[in-house]
Image 1 (cartoon, rainbow, N blue to C red):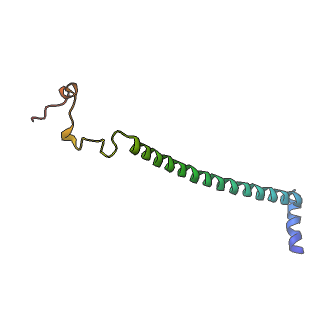
Image 2: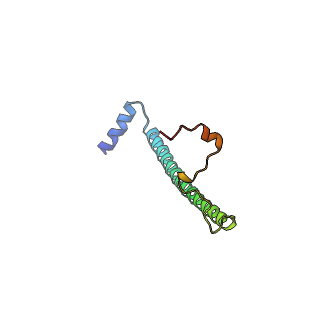
Image 3: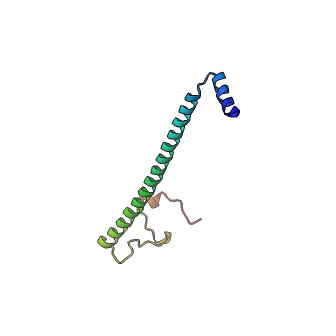
Length: 99
């Protein structure tokens, strides 16, 4: 009983009412609970957003594969730099490669 009253006496001596301290502790506890709930909701929403992004990406790929005029073939024909044909205007600004 003496140790319990010492903390109350110190709080009163410092100008604080013990009921105010308890009230502040309750408010802090409620604020921490709200914070944890918001963090959990943010995590869940991030998971849902990532899931939706992946599903949209899969749908886009499926639609492109099914409706594309390139269905069943590779639309990229150029395989390396030697197969690139430059516009004549671009070629005239290139340095001579003859050495």
